[in-house]
Image (cartoon, rainbow, N blue to C red; front, side, top):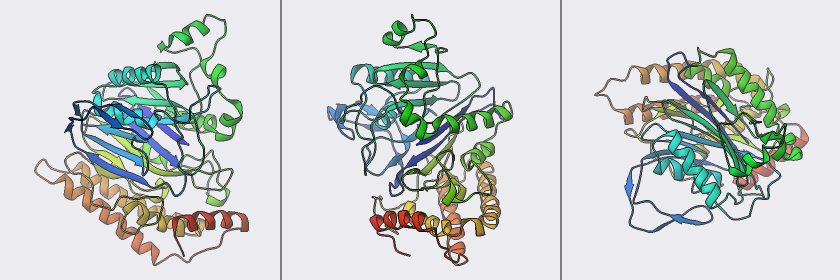
Length: 420
């Protein structure tokens, strides 16, 4: 499950486009954060997650956050300041077991297009020509259609799909999507199939195509209502810091991971009824050339760190779904799992230190001079987060879960090879 927010220059304090996403995945589905430079290609095809696709002669530089086993990406941005993210939406349309994932479409569009309008039509062409499909989960069966937020420094679009049917709307001020269709009859563009259906009176794309069962239990409508309301409350004054606050939020406070729900924006794993956990987060101030990623799970326990094309990312072994202390995602993940055993006991004090460090990272980034190294800044931010983690590892007294919640986590940790 995922949540994406966008605020256009009309809605932000600094008159810049803000794009933000929490990527929710299975708890052991480590996410790869990588910078891929512009490249020239001689091969005719590229292997996506499941299928081959024609390769471009040249692909643009991209920053991607992707599940370790996926070719595509949950979210990312390219060298032109184009950012894209997707969410799973559950519809009545049958999705094939093999095909092009929405995540693959994101990477293809980021590597080959420069503007939101160009990317929009590129993805639409894939959906109409090739369709969408493929299992979106490594550990279980998850077939779905996709919704996308596509934004560049000047313009943003929402694209919602159901199989090969689609609608798109230009975003004038604010918008957010979760795991439910949002567009009724107020689209700007639509597939021919939808235009034909819309000749009937009172046609709603969302109502016509939504699968009621899965949409209900994903609680996407509730999460979308929350994020949209939060954006509306600050419309015209939205900042990067405010976006960060939304991505770190839960459905109730004081929060307990044990009692959390699928309504949380910062989602914590909870077993059968809450199988997802926020695996990584992104906030981009489009046009500024520095983007903010956690590269770790649970933004309420993480620092957003500045990532740039020039500065790259500190070296770290590529993760899998097994614990590896030499990989940054897993190094921090083990701490997150320890912290959650005593979350309510320590979160207030930890949050104060997290916020102090986060503000220092922001100050250092904002004050960076032209001749100073972006690579050193990024490396410093990662090191400061590790120092915070190491300090708190020495302070936390491991708590105890309730029986069923503890049993769920024990199974997850055993699959990952984590022992406490």
